[in-house]
Image 1 (spheres, helix red, strand yellow):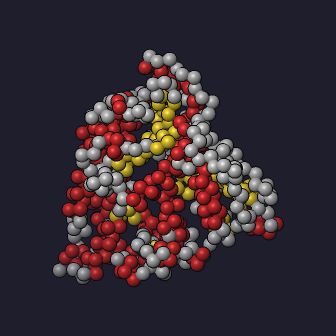
Image 2: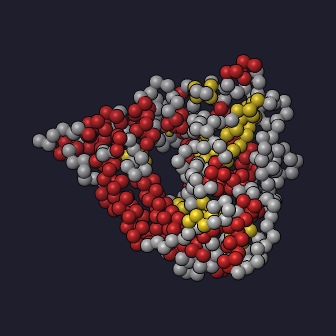
Length: 499
Ligand code: SF4
């Protein structure tokens, strides 16, 4: 059923070969599959609920495909309002991560220089005040807390500035359940204020760690980095014209060459494309004719920071970083094993995205490269014709905690060492299997019974945001949630007057 990728059909694995290319991975062009009719199914410009993926959504499907289906909005016969509320729930740590990212983005945006296609400066580097940025993101975090508790969501919706924290919803459920109207009528003061205070401390420290250790290289660590991925003096020394991405996103889901839109200074959602052969496509017309098809899937990949740099001998490096606020083990200085594995998978998605998005980086960004070398007084080296995996380095930067030096927080890997060919092969299989659960992809049509509560199968359902809608949620998971989130929220909006 599944056509093997060009790469994986090679007799010898290509993993580990430095010059791994898009072509070797079968990602450059749709690979013709033997026995496959030439029908092609490509997503249109708008977000496609079936064909479009992200690392987060793939991870969710891996832990419980039922959870993905319930959160997708496709499931028939469920309360749409409740489904939307459950889907929008955030957590304290997500809120914290959002504001840490914002603080860092503001420093890097100030640092950045943008040229137009003719090489003229569109945006110059500007000064920034770290203390003010730090104060303002802390303030935003406080607003998030207040807004979540007081239910004052603009338009009744929830967004990143006005999240509904699931911890709050559960707390409110307890308060209503405890039948203590004295508590219920005090929605403006959070009974969880202490946890928020701790989060604020983590937030402040994480921002400071990033600024002092990574950006300013306070400990002068990067001078001794043999791979020369971060310049001596820290990220502050990255040439402003060679910053390629700072969380580039997201005003619309453009299909019309988003890469070009990005290079013009516009915004779009970054993603990479992956093709796979589907034998029995859920497209009525093709199914009637018994025609197979090549599907194009898109995987969203929003990287926190991407820049180009050159080693002292002129070898180019495309460096990508992702900021993480996970709790770290105090002995190893690393996050939990599960998080490490998950983060490595995410880096693989990023590596594929970078290979597609920047395959012609040396030609497309030649004016920026020339400008950077002029600034440094070094001669421009001979530039390669194509970006290959051995030139790409990626790493998560763990920002939480104290007393950890930059090299322990940032352990980059080379894309050539990530077994990308095996990863692409497995990903194709997963995408094809998922499409097989639909009876139609346009409009997306499927039924709950096709989406196994895999968490339960493995005896480890930890619950999820969709638990109130899940017929298979175990009793202990259900009991943490109000019977109906909609009902609970309406009680809290119109609480019983204080007696
Ligand atoms: S409650 Fe458990 S089984 Fe049900 S969707 Fe969530 S994780 Fe899956």
